[in-house]
Structures are given as structure tokens and as C-alpha cells.
Length: 335
Image 1 (cartoon, rainbow, N blue to C red):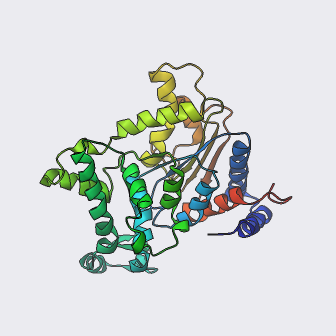
Image 2 (image 1 turned 90 degrees about the horizontal axis):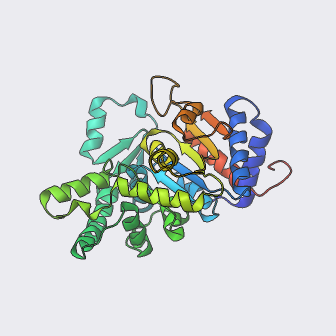
Image 3 (image 1 turned 45 degrees about the horizontal axis):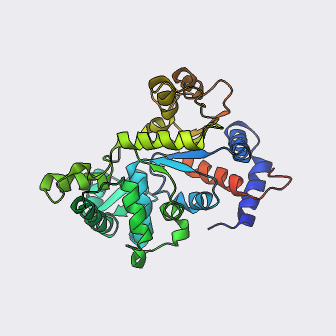
């Protein structure tokens, strides 16, 4: 975990050297993030891609602990992969020459039960199966009691109960899910079925070890909870939206505003008051990830005067730098 002095040093460095183009946008976005918080606004972060396997928890966990993020929307993969890293970090393998791998090399990784994400291999038995066993046990307990829960609630409870404590291979201070569970941070996980645990849960329903698929609460229910969160936390000042990548992790939560206004016919709904996206997607071809922020005005998601930033770069480089600047103590150079 980086100290505040380290964060300040990083912030001072980028304040001096990041002056133009995407670098300058990074500074503007980070400072506008801080301004939004100073004004009492709430911030949502959305996680697409494989940011948990990229160990974003090293910076995101501290952001959560310091109450500089108030909700997260993420893919099911990001939800579970932070915990995989927590319990199996020493069994991961990094492949810096991944671009040179031939199909036969990929098959050898599969034979060793190593699932590759770019340059990082996740070990199936030490990570995925270890988490699966206790997760499914908890699902069966819920089913027996005729109770239901969201996937993140099950993982939160297992973390709080110390279910994997003896297996930790990194400092839990570097796990964003551990930090989120301690804060009971509002989490929204659309399309959870599209994840390893989601596939395992579906398989358990198919083979009969779990009889009731609705034991896991649905994406529609996540949207209902998201509406309650936005209404309760962002009614005075619209929420902030910090989007890493694109896809369902970003498109699902940003839609809560037009849903409230256009489908529930609620008056006075605040648009999102801050928007930043880190993306390397081409701005074209009808993709959500590549849509410029102004397009979101037409959908009722952002207002004309919402501060809008797009940083066209690699999120594994950009996000930790922005988080460091947001976390840094104020000084003449960081203010």
C-alpha cells in the first residue's frame, strides 16, 4: 500500500510533466474528480476488462478506504479475479513473451490448468476451484434457508468470515474486494453469469447440486438497487462516473439516470455530474466503448455542461496515476 507521501510524489511528478494531449487530459480528469468530491458528490467507478488480474487493487483499495469512491460496477470476472489473486498470487505465472506463443504453447498452458489473460496465467485449482468450493457451499446454505443474495454479498460475507484467510498470499490491504467488504461498499455486477463463478453456478443448477437458480439475485434486481442508491446518494448533486474500459460494466449503471427520468417519469433527476472514461477503443463503428461522451447527451445520461474526459490510453497505466493524484495530500503543485 502506497503511503500518502508516495502518492504526493507521484502526483507532483505528473503535475510537472503531464502537460499535453492524453497526459494533460489525465491531469484535468483527476483534478475534476477531486473537485466533484470536494463539492460533496459521490463517485462510481466501473471496471471492465481484466483490471483485477492487472492488480488494480494496489491503488483502488486505498481509494475505497479513504471514501473517495462510493460505488463500483464491475464484471463478474473482476469481482472474482481480485479474490483469485488474493488467495493464489504465488501460483500465478507471468509470460512477458506472450506475443510469441504458438497454438501449441497455448495448449500446454491449458494442459497445466493455466488460464491466460494477456501476460498473466491464472491457476485453475489454486484460484478458481478454491473459491468455487466455499462459494457453492454458501449458495447451498442460502437455498436450504430459502434465502437469496447477490453474488458480491456472498463474497463479502465469506471474506468477513475469514473463509480463505489462511490462504492469503498477498497483503489484504492490496485487495479492493477486501476493502469493499470492510466498507460494505455498494456493488453492482451486471451479467454476472458471464464469469467463471457464474458458469460454475449454472453447472451446479444443471447437475442438480443447486435446485433453485434464483438463489442468486438477478441483474434486474441489481438495477433496482442501483436506482435506490442513485436516488438516495445523488439526488442533491448528480453522481460522478469514472469508467475504465466499456462494455456492460459501464453501460449498465450509466443507464440508471435515463431509466429514472424516461421510464419511471421521475421529475428533477440529476444527470451524471462528472464523466471520465479511460479507453483504447476506436471512436467509431457503433461500439459503446468507442462512443464519445457527447453521444450520451442524446440518451439523457449526461448534461451539456457535465465535465467530460476521455483518456485514450492503457487503463493499467492511467488508472493508478489518476488514483494517486486523487489520493495525494493537497500541496501547491497538486492543488
